[in-house]
Amino acid sequence: MDHPTAADLMQIPLLAGMPTEFRAELAQRLEVEDHNDGHAIVREGTSGYAFYLLASGTAVVTQEGHELRRLESSDYFGEISIMGEGRRTATVTAVGPVVVWVLFGTAFRVLQTSRPDVSAAIEAAMQQRLAGN
Figure 1: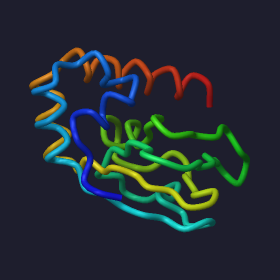
Figure 2 (figure 1 turned 45 degrees about the vertical axis):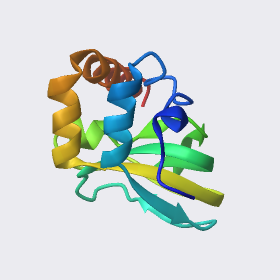
Figure 3 (figure 1 turned 180 degrees about the horizontal axis):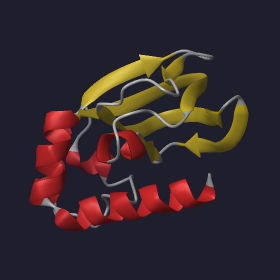
Figure 4 (figure 1 turned 120 degrees about the horizontal axis):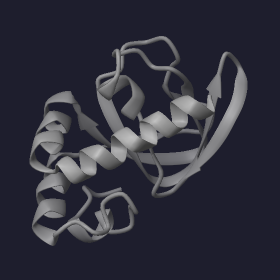
């Protein structure tokens, strides 16, 4: 998959309401990763230094071997470790081919400071996920 554009990021509900200029800037900071079926994109207990947007495909989230949820295109993950204590709280595994857009720590911090509304939405999702786990 090619590098994402501002239009691509409009498909992510978390970012859809953001100005085009912001999405264009964010798109330039994202890395693209492809994962095959069964590949663990992140592993529970490891250090977490990136935030992920699921560009295409399906992934399963497990904790201590138990399935918590399935993620589909336009979902995101990694917010708990990058905003919290730095450890992954779950494993996220590709179900079939998956493409993710990755925002690494420094770029994520820029997002937090430049768009407190997005940061607040991510933090609210993190709290909700922690409460549900």
